[in-house]
Image (tube, helix red, strand yellow):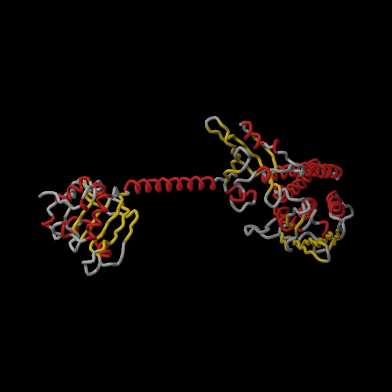
Length: 511
């Protein structure tokens, strides 16, 4: 067939030549001289454009395309697609493009699709191809619907899509890495922050924000940290930036370590810290510094409490030696054999030890001396337990006690321990506890601003009256009650057993 000479088919490169030599008589379109003006105009645009274009024409969607579009096709369709019916050519993707073509052909207007996946077979395999394309109606006055065909203007944007997807994946991976990095930073127990060359904060973690009372990093990042949290000495004197170890590290690159320094909480309170500063370098150039902290409030508090404990322990030891010296001296003057004196001293020291065991836990807590106390009932149990049956079902209950909780201080506990020991020792030697059936009851209460304690013995040897002489134990007891407790003792020498009433002002109990 000889090439046609119609001007609207002139030029167009390879596809122009193929269109001109194609046997159009074998298609529903017939010879080019009969083609409607709308198709001729569209073909002229298609053949003279350097942009990929494609035409479907008529009810059978007969196909045309230009050289630019040919480059997007594989050998499976070029050149056979020229003059072919659209459905036959694109059956594998018709479920995608068929409805779009029908939309245009039925007069509903143009369509536009950006970065749209339309997989096609080319070069022997099915490829995922992303297109940006538009379908526009081609007018045809001879067609009852007014639309004769579809002009396709398109771009294969697969390379751009894959690049954008790779960039998205890279950004997602970067974000995931940043999120994980942030998770690690915020999981760290020790506070830290980083500064740039001008001392501005560039990074910090949640521990740092919490330590200094900031709600989030926006209140810190980009700000001068020295001016924000390190601006004054502990006494309120200004802290010059040139003296700041963090800024010094930024300027010189020399690591810094400060054992005890003050930062300031957002509310103005002081936060004692120990911190380390190290330079951040890249290619030998200082970029800033990283500073990590430890809040040493607890450490300083512990050191202060330890110092207080040592001073108090020293005071207690001196007091105990003074008490023991008095016990030894008075016991030596009481007469009796060496064995009796030694036994008396051992018993009294044992009572002191029991009292000291009770007050030691409070002492180890290093609370204020006026606030420390033990309970009178616990002291009574500790001192009298060797004499039988207190809270012990395996023994006959020979000593019973009853009274409400009464807190007592360490000095009061020492004095009462000696007093109770003397009561019990005398009962075991001469009174109710010297025989098999005697019992002791001890009751106490606090009323009218005073402790009232009653020691009552029953079932022991008959008493015929007050002893003619008083021994060392009685003297020690009186000295402890009257001197240490500011109280008084009253003895009742009843035939059925001794009764002792002790009264001590309440204000003397917790010392």
